[in-house]
Image (cartoon, rainbow, N blue to C red):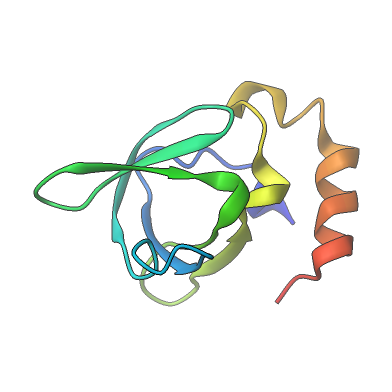
Length: 96
């Protein structure tokens, strides 16, 4: 559950699920995060992705982590204050 509280900027990410099929498979480094979006630099350009609609796999290597975008639709600095809301959303969607 700690992964929902971590800083995402600078981490490698890939979008694994989204209702927008053009976003699925977008991968790169997270360069910016706002309340509702994240920006992923895929080598050529930065793509702005809405958190609400996607599921991300953060990290590459031994232990990648799946994160549901709905659970982290807060500003990075507000996640500590919103811990209970995040845990409620995680239990609602189920953690894989």
